[in-house]
Length: 172
Image (cartoon, rainbow, N blue to C red; front, side, top):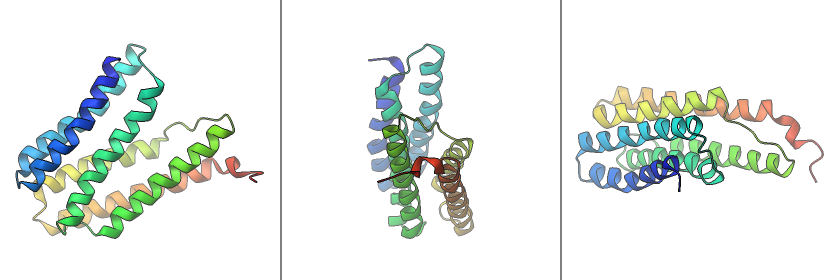
């Protein structure tokens, strides 16, 4: 197993640690684990590219680990009443839709790389959720972060489908 893949798996292991700390009310420690997990995303990507450790496992697991981390935090905030559940549903819908688009593209021997807007969405979401961990008692922070997540999520989802609309030509 490559170093990059080990870091990705460590990120997955950090998710329940983050949740235990968050539910225990240890939001600063939860934030520290969350930030470490977010930073590990950049580190494993750098290592995979720089040291030629790109693998099929990493291509699958890295984005899945990101989604699991972000959605775990969003579900926590929704349950605590700091984020509406429908906002989590919008993010889930976009993730499922883009994953479906990628599956159709693969069947047509085409790979859809991560778009810039998707990277911006991920960065905004990760930073925003960190801000919520630190300042969740301030309702304006929760509202602004939720709006930012929704705007970047919807925009990037539309962009993925628009730029790859030809994938749907001649579908049975």
